[in-house]
Amino acid sequence: MDMPAVVIKNVSFNYSSQTKRPALDNVSLQIAPGSFVGIVGHTGSGKSTLVSLIDGLGRPTSGQIQVGDVVVDAQSSATDLAKLRHHVGYVFQFPEQQLFAETIGQDIAFGPTNLGWSADRVQAAVSDALRMVDLPAEFAKRSPFALSGGQMRRVAIAGVLAMHPAILILDEPTAGLDAAVTHRLMANIAKLHVAGTTILLITHQMDQVAQYADQVVVMNQGRLVKSASPREIFADPAFLMANHLNVPPAVAISHRLRDAGLAIAPAMSIDALADQLAAKLGGTPGE
Ligand SMILES: Nc1ncnc2c1ncn2[C@@H]1O[C@H](COP(=O)(O)OP(=O)(O)OP(=O)(O)O)[C@@H](O)[C@H]1O
Image 1 (cartoon, rainbow, N blue to C red):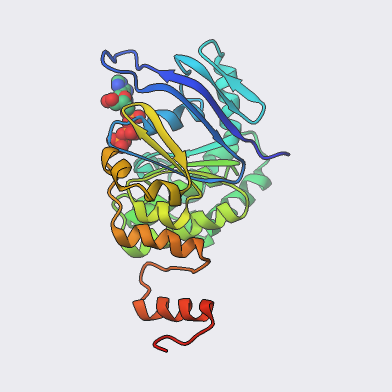
Image 2 (cartoon, rainbow, N blue to C red):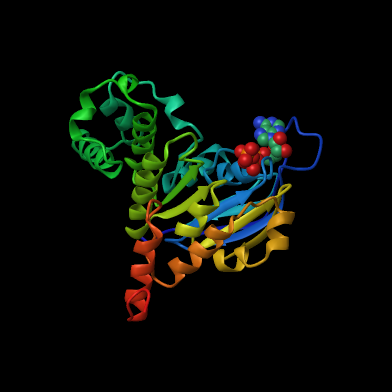
C-alpha cells in the first residue's frame, strides 16, 4: 500500500462551547509520507485540535482534511471519520491514564482486536509492540498497574503501535518522564520513523525538534504561522520570540550539527562531540 500523505486545506474549527476566536483558523498544511513533523506553539495555540482532526475525532467546521485517499469535511459521516483512523494512531497526553485491562497483553491487544484481526495476528502485534517500546515479552502477562510511570507510558504507546499506524501522532510523549526514559523513548520513535512511519510530534521540548524533526509547524492562536525546516525556524530569533518559542543557543546549534551528519546523544561530553567533529573534518582535536 502507498504510504498516505496528509493534506489540510483551509481548515477552521470551533468548539461548540467556544465564543472567542476559533481553535483553528484557516489552517493549510501538507505532510509528505515518512516525514517527522514537530508541532510547536504556545499553550492553547491549537496543536491538539489540529492533530485530533487528522485522527478523525471531529469534523472541521470548514475546509477539508485528506489522509491518503480519505477526505473529510464538515459534512462527512461518522464512517468517513473512522476511515481516517485506519491510517492514524494517536498517543494522547499522559496515555497511561487510559490503561484499563487486567494484563498488559490484553491492554495492547485491544486496538488490534477491534480492527478484526485474527488471534494469531493480534498476538504477533502485541509481541512486536512490546519490543518496539523496549519492554520484555513476559510483561504481557503482568498487570499494567504494577509498573513505573515510564513503563506504563510505554505500554500505552505500545497499544497504539500494535495497530501499525502509517501516521503516528504523539502529544507530549515525554512529559513528566526522566531524562534517561525520555532519551530511550525518543530513540524508539526515531526508529519507527526510519522504518517509514510518519511522525507528528507535539512538543514544547525544542531539543527534540532540533534532534529529530525535518519539518516544524508553528501554531499561534489557531493559525499556522510557519511550516519549515528546523534550520529555517531556528534562524530567526524575533520570530521565535513572537511565537513564544524558547530555543536555547545550544539547541539552535545542535540541529546544525545534526544537519552536518553528527550524532548527538543527550549525555554526550563536549570532548566526545569534539572528537566526532574532528573525525568528520579529518583532523585531530586540539591540533
Ligand atoms: N473541549 C474544548 N471546548 C472548548 N474550547 C476548547 C476545547 N479544547 C480546546 N479548546 C480551546 O481551543 C483552543 C486550542 O486548544 P488546543 O488544546 O488545541 O491547544 P494546544 O496548542 O494543544 O494547547 P496545549 O499546549 O496547552 O495542549 C484554546 O483556546 C482552547 O481553550
